[in-house]
Amino acid sequence: MLQRDTHDTQETQQNEREDGLTCFREEFYQIPGKIYLDGNSLGLLSVRAEKSLLRCLEAWKSLGIDGWMRASPAWIDLAEEIARLTASLIGAHPEEVVVANSTTVNLHQLLATVYEPDATRPRIVTDALAFPSDRYALESHLRLRGRDPGVDLITVPPRDGRILDEEDILAALSDDVQLLIVPSVVYTSGQLLDLPRLTHEAHRRGVRIGVDCAHSIGCVPHRLSLWGVDFAFWCGYKYLNGGPGASGGLYLNRRYHDRSPGLAGWFGSCRDKQFDMLPHMDPAPGAARLQIGTPNILSMAPLLGALEMIAEAGIERIRARSLALTDYLMQLASAELTSFGFQCVTPRAPERRGGHIALAHPEAVRICRALRAHGVVPDYRPPDIVRLAPVALYNTRQECQEAIRRLRHIMETEEYRRYATEREYIV
Image (cartoon, rainbow, N blue to C red; front, side):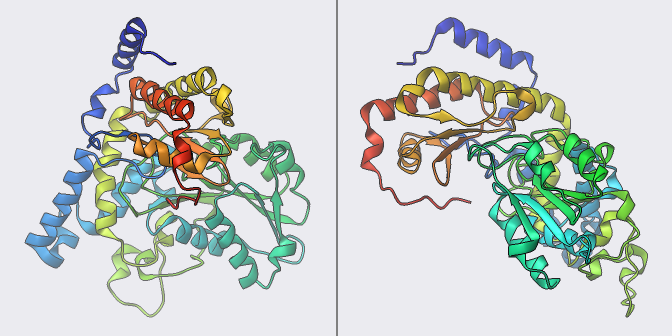
C-alpha cells in the first residue's frame, strides 16, 4: 500500500516552494475535509474573486444605475477590462477578445458570423469526442442553413476509442469542407491537440478552424493570433475560477473584424453611438461587435479578481506546475492502481496533455461515489472515466498522493461495490 515517505514529502514541499505558486493556495477557500480535484469542472472560490464580486454589489447598493459609469471599474467597461486580462492567456490581441454570454451562445454567434456554407463548401468537420453541446450547436446551424447534419457534419472517430489522431482529422478535410471545429483539450481523456499544426494544415486546404478552449484556458498557454486560428470560445468557471455560470468569452481573428455580427444585439454597437438608440446598428470595432445583450455584470465580476491573480502567477508558471502535478498523479496511478484494472488514458507526453488525467475503469460511477464519501472530489464522464484535475494554484502533491492512497483503499476493500451504479450528473 502507498505510504507517505518522509524524504519524499520533504522533497515535494521543497519543489513546491521553488515553483513560486504555493502562496496562491492561501487565497482560495478550501472545502473543509475535502481534497478538491474537480477544478476542470468548477474552480474554487478565491478571496480576490469574492472581493471583486462584493465590490460590484456594493456599487449596485450605493450607486444604483450610476454604477454603469461610476463603479470601479465602470460596469460599461467591465467586459473590455476582463477581455484585456484574458487576451494574454490565449495569445490574442485585446481587440480580438470579448467576454460575454455562455460557451454555447458564443459558439452560435461565431458560427453565425464566420460559417458561410455554399454549394461547393458546405460541410463541417468535428471530432467524435467533442463536448456534446458543441455538436448540438453545429447540427442546429446546418439545419438553419438548409443543410442535412447527417450528410454535412463529418465526425472523426478516435482510433482506439480514446485518443484522436490529427492525421485522421486532416484526412477528413476534403474539398467540400469549409469549417473544422476541435477542442484544444479533449474533455474526456485530457489529450491536448496540436493546434498550430491543425491550423496550418486546415488553412492550406482552404478550411477555417474554430477551437473550443473550455478545458485549456487558464491552464495551457496558447498563441491563437500567431497560429492564425480563425475563432475560439470558452467558459469562465473552470481553470479561470470565475464561479458557477461565469461569463464565457470568444476570440475572433482580426481578418474577420469587418464582418457584421451574425447575431446582432445592442451591446455590439459602437460605444459612442450605443445610447443614441439608432434604428440601424453601427457595430463596435473588433470582436466587441459580437456582444449581444447587456453584459451579465454579476457573472463577470468574480472573473476580474480571478484573472488578476492568474496574471500575477503567470500562465507559463501555471502550466509548468500543472504538468508536474498531472505527471505525479500519473506516476502514482501507474504504480498503485494498474493491478485494480485502471487504465490511464491521458497521453504521457507533456506537449500532448492538458490539465487533468483520466482513469478508465468499468466501475467508474461507483468509484467516484466512493471517492466523494472518502473526501476526494473527482468527476465522472461516461462511459467509464474518473477525471482528476489538480489545479496549479491551489492543489498540492501531498493531496495527489493522499487521493491515490484513498482510491487504492477503496479498491482493496471493494468499498465501491456499496454504491449505486446510476450515472452521476455533474456539469
